[in-house]
Length: 325
Image 1 (tube, rainbow, N blue to C red):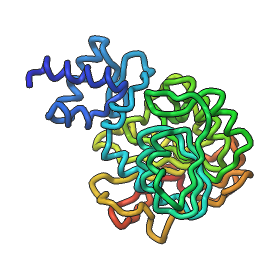
Image 2 (image 1 turned 120 degrees about the vertical axis):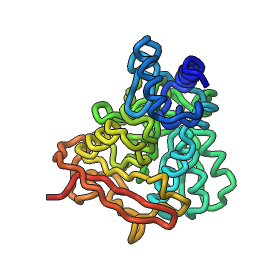
Image 3 (image 1 turned 60 degrees about the horizontal axis):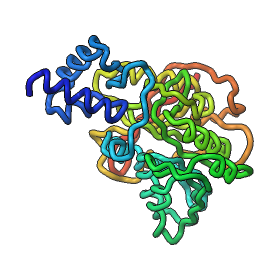
Image 4 (image 1 turned 45 degrees about the vertical axis):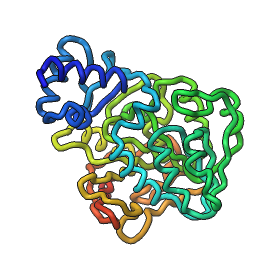
């Protein structure tokens, strides 16, 4: 494929998806990431797109939201690995909320076998994934259907969440930065995600590496409120994504990173069983690694990142958290 054809295809992918990782671009155009990086740099010089941590986005720094068909095809391997790990955080009998998104849909598919769950969601796709799980109770919010991501939004969805309290919220979005936290490109979706966040004692964000460093228009979950991030291992040489993870860890976010080269299934449990979560009901959050009590939005000590590596039945898990001193 000639350079002009390759760059045109790259540009079309970015326009369709809003943000695409270098790994995904290299796979589609069937060339190396080094060549793709050179093409992205050339397109950026022409003002046609912007480079971001390990990928490319629409120009201007704020990506637009892509439709469900494009999202479902983007980073599918990464989303599967993330969902496998996130499912290991859920315990029998829990009450949780799950937001809309293709990664949260993958999570829902893995929760069908956990008995006694109550799942509150505004996502038709999440509800569909759990529809035939006879030991899981699914509660749908009200609201207006947003066809692009099969989610219920608007005042009806937000009002149905008032007064709700659950142990954990699993949320995704269009971008994640240490500076602004989780964000999305749609105002109505952002409002519902904030209502889901307020209903939970712990906030678990599911985001593949291509969303790290991506900033979109509407903030949903500030960094200091995120309890746990489940993501995948960034591509080799993606130092900026690693720096973003470090910055999030400095905010006190517990980070679990799935190694795609080592993942082959499994339940995502670290050695010794599932990660312990102390806060299940209203009250102050607990730092996931040190166990110290931290009020929501309160100050957290910055510390160097300390990787902790274990194994699962299907691969390797790396937990990233501020090092204890």
